[in-house]
Image 1 (cartoon, rainbow, N blue to C red):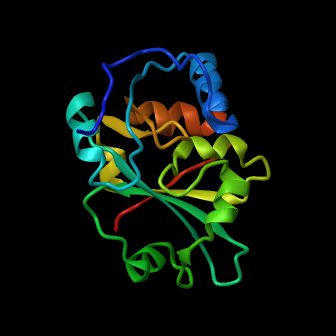
Image 2 (image 1 turned 90 degrees about the vertical axis):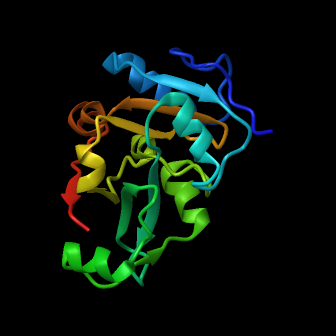
Image 3 (image 1 turned 135 degrees about the vertical axis):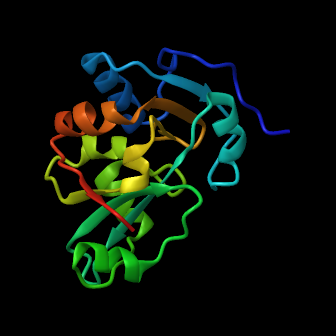
Length: 179
């Protein structure tokens, strides 16, 4: 059976990586309320269904994308049920086709591994190499569900706090698109 802890409103006792530590440091500094649960390792959207039910929200799907030359990067945040279509994404932004960026680049640039892509990775993107693209459907949701930078801790925050407070703090201006 998939383990999900009781809901907590504080950070973990020990951090599993630098990104997780920076995530909670930023949330405390910004005084952003959140709820979180510890879980067994969850790396697919199917794994997140039970987490969604526990936290009463919808987990977002976060994809790390790049152009063919691997010189332009995008963190695309969309709904969990929406299949990714590179043509629609590229058309919405008026750019050349994109593909998934290599896992090692995501780890180097955003501090997380496959399955743990999160908006909080922007805290480690000090050179502002990654453009944050948010699906309009996500922006309309009251709550935002995501990883804290690990594959074993998931959280619920207000979407408006992510867009209006967290991303400016991380010095990233999101682009909201309809796809």
